[in-house]
Length: 204
Image 1: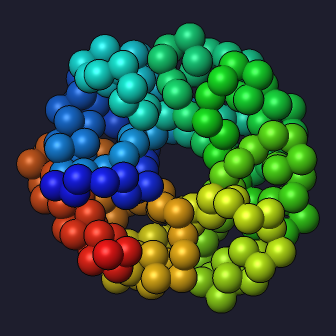
Image 2: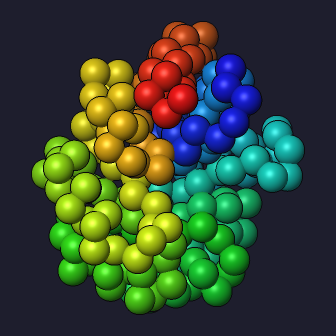
């Protein structure tokens, strides 16, 4: 388990409320900074509520695939502290910021990234990261305001995580290479620990 923040976010797409807490606990124990329950999961808000209730108040629990300001408000009411979207909608970013939550809007171009920052975001989800690429992220970093957190999502796994870390990513969102619906918590925890090891070695 790492002793410093990793910036790693576990995407628990498809998780059910009944398994959400055990899976999330295994991931947090391995050293991940946050878990995200996408809206297109079974009863996602209930999963967020349960994960939030099971841990400390400052634990980072997020809602994903957040598409509207109403989605933001409902996630906030459930206890989400970060809001993750596949796209850039300024009104979604603005509502997230208004509620004091962390905003991770998805962007695939510098134009979208600048629009997200103009709306109040401080972090950008590079999505899909396979389209932007590591060289693309480096190019973005050269023109975006200093301190902008770039977080690749979509196609990040144990094979390329170290490369993203070396290139300056602030973290990464990791989905199917970490968790698939029905995976046992112990298996997910083992995968999470390996990803944390890779990240920590690359950023040491």
